[in-house]
Amino acid sequence: MDQDTIVAIATAPGPGGIGIIRLSGAQALPIGSAMTGTELQPRHAHFCAFKDSTGQLLDTGICLFFPAPNSFTGEHVVEIQCHGSPVILDMIVREACALGARQAQPGEYSQRAFLNDKIDLAQAEAIADLINSTTEQAALNASRSLQGVFSRKIDALVAQVTKLRIFVEAAIDFPEEEIDFLNNSEVENQLQDILDQFDAVAAEAKQGSLLQEGMKLVIAGKPNAGKSSLLNALSGQDTAIVTEVEGTTRDVLREQIQIDGMPLHVVDTAGLRDSDDVVELEGIRRAWAEIESADRILLVIDDSAAEQQGSAFWPLRDKTTERDIPLTIISNKCDLSDRKPGISQQGDTPVVYLSAKTGAGMDVLRQHLKACMGYREGGEGHFSARRRHLQSLAQARQYLVDGQSQLLHAGAGELLAEDLRLCQRSLGEITGAISSDELLGAIFSSFCIGK
Image 1 (cartoon, rainbow, N blue to C red):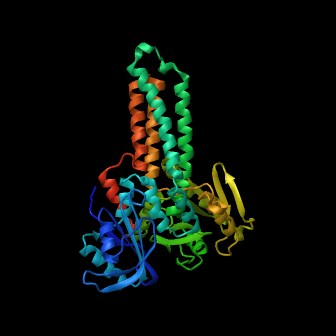
Image 2 (cartoon, helix red, strand yellow; image 1 turned 120 degrees about the vertical axis):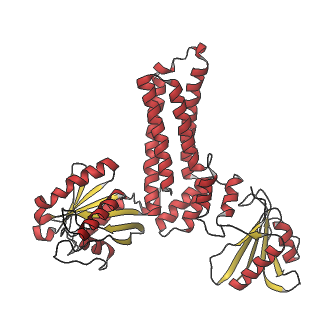
Image 3 (tube, rainbow, N blue to C red; image 1 turned 60 degrees about the horizontal axis):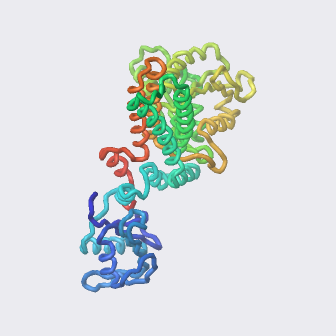
């Protein structure tokens, strides 16, 4: 690891009552002592005058020293608290650099904390998620991940996989012990128990990812079903042009909204139908592209002409089934059909009856979307997660499924052991127990400078 001593402003850009500068590294204490003219004692607040090498007074404030390994980064850390003028902060940073420090790279403090085993990778990402939280719910979830809630769940899965892998490999390596694990129902039961635990953690991680990054809602349906009216009703403003002319919406429209502090990325698309119009065809192509990347699809049909509009459901059902995309049917214009607003089930598919024009039933839709995102009062029980975590969990689970198949259908213990090893590796990518330099670079480069 780079042994340079780094320095950066930890407070947000712009003027403020107080500004904070942090140094981390082997030379943090000598540099801090030189700038303050004070023999800094561990974990003591010293009122100091900060001066440059010529003795020029830069500012006065508080200086603290946190010796390694009992600091955030695990290195010697000196924290300077002074007045929050950007000019003063910049002068102090320049003086620290003149004394041997260098400007920190984005995320370098958190990266050093990770490399020094102060936090794992999931906790490091939770720091960035906490800083970038735009809702109360997201902040609460990120705080829980920072405290290690998500990491402990992953560690528990790793422990279960490791225990099973030890048994399987022991049976392979010591056949004279006559452990016939291939016919041992205990192995099958353990595999299924682990798969059940995977599903529980993955479901919670998916909700955490949606709450942190927002759920992408794609509004789809036939022309004139009321898709643009629904977008306007959800956003509370006239984002989309609404007319009685079919095919008014020809391009993708996007709007970011919040429902009780929960982020939603709403996408309105062109009406799905056969067309000879080149421009409309391009809009329909883009609509299908958005549908394939959706977290949930709102299929809008005209409740006053439901039989004709409902034909749009079948190609969407095939698409959502193939990619496991949840679907909600929005039966719009219930004011014209005299149907009472509300929600029901059509098989496994929820159906919301509403009128985007009058607003009737919109509260029902909002409550439904909150439930889809896993909303809970007070944010209890959730943690933040990222899409890369979901991908690693899915890959790890697939290795387990493959191993289970090898055991049950081929009796291949060696292949089961290999799948268990690969499962461990995928889980290790979440917490950083196993990680590449490219992955670390991509993650920490997204942090702000002072972290």
